[in-house]
Length: 237
Image 1 (cartoon, helix red, strand yellow):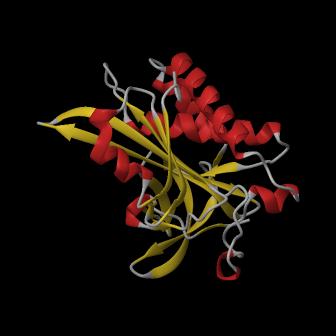
Image 2: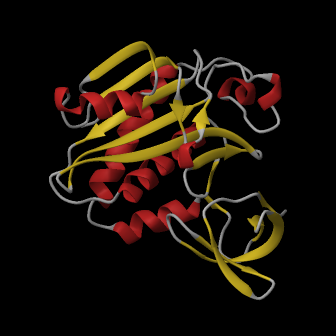
Image 3: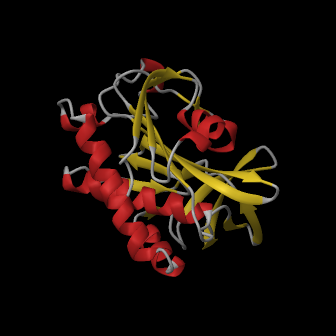
């Protein structure tokens, strides 16, 4: 189960980093929740603004069989989107691991492995969701909170519990069915194969067509040349 063991910290640099340092002290499925983070982490080394009022937490797994990092990211991405759906919030997964609403970032996921002597001993899934936190003016064009969407505060413990329960059910269901969870992940994914997107090519913004999607690379046709990209500048409407 997820969340049978919970530690709540008022302030920490990053819940992922905390669990990396202390994974030996926790059981499989333990979660660490922070009221606020001073150095929240995003993909590709980016920082994640995470003040009081948001949901910032990490889940520790100590898998006995190999399950890829990408599978955990997909499971939690789907769990978040489907929990939000029950709240009438039509969110989607912006490739590969962010949750968006109306073109603005609502949540993000970062899965990391801890290895000892080339053996994975722990997997940590970090989740950050803008719930009741105020979005600074300089971020309002690119970020949004559940409070802003629903015009009211949301019970953070409800969101936490609902996501963890749903993620656990998905893990049990799709533990040995990588293709099935990938299909479900793609159902909520933007962009999709065939979509037009804008990407950075040689420090220039170029438009291309998505040919193939994998967990860490988008293969895009830009002017007849196929390139692999790790981030998207914009999805073309």
